[in-house]
Image 1 (cartoon, rainbow, N blue to C red):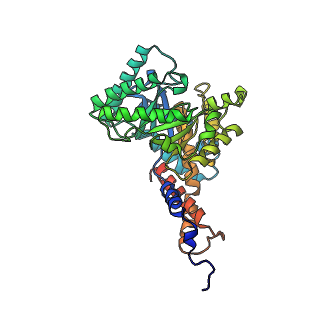
Image 2: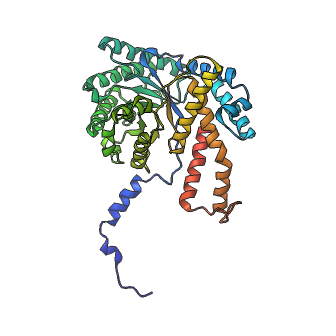
Image 3: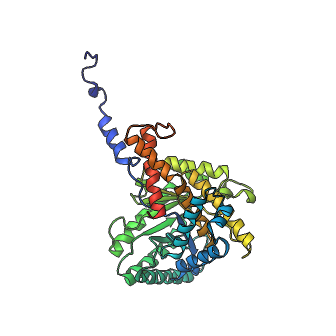
Length: 394
């Protein structure tokens, strides 16, 4: 054909570099990797080798007492389909009675732990390491686990690094290395520089302990409006390539926004704004996103109070899932019941329909109800099916 421009590529000399950068950062077309449905976090002084098993046993007992049948589950969690309620109930019973109920465990040395004397925190760090080593030897360590250290924003970065150092030095000595699945949670990242500074400390720890580079990935916590302006994919480089996740901290964030105490809730519009900023900043990267928690326990052991907690927790879990957050923090064993019921129902309700839409696209035909999906939607459907498989263990 006739053209006017004989060499269009010559007019775009920077394209190859820009395209290479684009492709290097793209992950949208890749299948999502396994991600835990939740994170259980436990104050360091309350943590022991039996913690995960105790949480599972308590949750299982609550299920047996107050959610004995699929019909009870349907009533509490408003599941309309009897078949779906039966399948979710079966899966949750199995999950809570299995050996891997807690999927992600964080030993907390920050807000849940509080300020302690230096010697006391040192002792708790060593004790936590001994407990993890015992769990590792017994095969009871969750698939994902780690520490939350104190924030650099507290003005004493040496304390955060010392606790992590003492924990890791003790653990690697006892366990003969670092068990798989470790993450360190870095809270209140109110200055971008803190990420690079903490990453430098992690590199030094790896070298000193003889660990391979990158063995200590970090999770940043977004807990303050001051963090939002510097959220961007480039934070992965700021953190020297070790930024594995971003977790939202609802209570610090809403307090910093000046919200009234009764409005400090996960489904407040201010929290939606922060979560959407995180979602946009890390779209197309390998950074996982995790939502905050419901800071509530059953008001009593009565059926009505336990079920009231489950209903409220299910509301915020559904809110998170609808906003693209497939992981959240759990603060009480009762939350495990509502977490898994809601998560399983979310994935099971649409899984077959998603699979049929993908099949129709591959076969270049409309679905049974006439839908004609775009390639971008099919990528989303495929990703949703992968997430469902991971969450359900299928």
